[in-house]
Image (cartoon, rainbow, N blue to C red; front, side, top):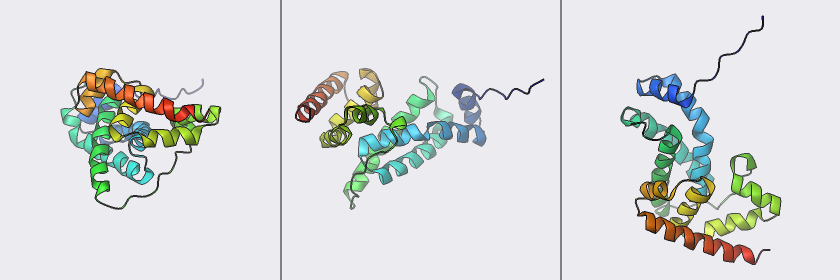
Length: 184
């Protein structure tokens, strides 16, 4: 008789245990989601070092807030909101200090936009076009087009109205389109 390895715990099970203070369950949640946190932070900030700091700070903030997590959204959505808020905080801090040059994510498996840009041979152009957007427009484009968030989720996370989210998305997409038309 072959031994069957146990099925990995679902995020919901781990969340319930983490809310009760189980550090091992929370550590597993962090292991599962940290790459996504890093990718989102990098997309918002364009800086690998700051994105790494945001990823670490997200884990800390999530652990400290586990007791208040109401489970009205998924753990992933909840922590992505923490990533966005932490990214804005880090951006403000970074503006007060010297910044490092922009580097590009080299792992297409965790970076679907660049993966498709690679297939078209315009990866660098897409990355540069995204970085040229204002922070406000880039955040909406990344959250809506890359992560598939609804306008309401984007608006709530960024603290703006749904209408403002739609306007920023339109402006961001228009700017990207104009920049990338010259590439093709």
